[in-house]
Image (cartoon, rainbow, N blue to C red; front, side, top):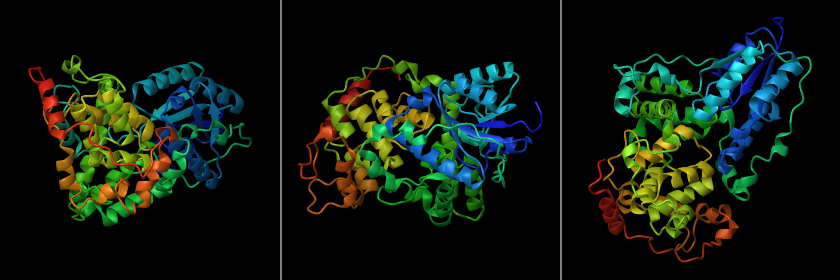
Length: 472
């Protein structure tokens, strides 16, 4: 192939221009760069909210590429078939992409790389979705880390590559291949009327992500270790939405956090630890992919989880358990597409312990409802809360939602923000819940707030009784 042959840039969860090693390498290859996104079966399996948010991200990425004189080519089909077609159509000599680490993506990418190389195509994968490739972090015995704190200690002083600048220009081909119409994919179909409710809360694309990071470092990170748990306060970075689709890189977040720590901003250390918590989730998913589908601690396999979609589970999904902290957090998710991290722990503990329902039910529901859904973080979070996962909260620790409410929402601002029933003049945020949820639920702000599905003391006793005598 001549040096001027195109390079295909296969985009996935890396929808940005800066700190993009695969894009940087493609631009240095000497020929045109053809960015492409493939709508394959792995995209088809996404839940409603993540798929809708992906569609918004792709639209924004298309605009960002256009500003650089480039385009985003959209194709639907099996990834290998699509990429081979594009190689034939464009005469491309190379296909570059950013690595992913869930088992389905790894299996697909391995097969694609082998087949393209057999075809004589330069197929290469690059880092960028993580700071530390999972196979580069090992214990002294050469195995994986199973507990977070030793993992943090192993990586906290490592050098993290400085973020790469966005290319000044992206070389374009003389003739662009045909592209599907993004609207025709209808990626937001399953969101139905909820899309209009959630959309104002989305901060979309690379520019918004950088602004979000800048504002957090300037105004919030100093007090992050305290304010991140106060439910009614905007005290977190909220970057999970953008990290999930690669609209910002963890390297960019890390170096911003390092600068803040050097400036004496106390909460920066906690922020860095949260970034490494994400890395730890990927480390575990890579080394023990069963975390996505089965109890990570195999001794939990005999635990009598409820796996039925019973009335209690339905009320949990609806945010109508009668437990204010649980319901407020669930309703926040339906209106904003995200949930406060403290809320995630509380609702997960309630489902798996007070209701003794399987963590898979909750994990799957979050997979459908969160715009910041991430396979590794979602799975580890649920198993951590349930007690069946690595580095888990002790199985006998049962969060009391009322105690959590008193501690992290003492003036009830968070609860009033999201629960309309019983308020004479509920805020728009609380009323929006009824506009977001399915009409089939037949819910109204004028309904009476439900009685608790279980008395908290009784639920705790039931959980502890179920744990008794088991070898955890």
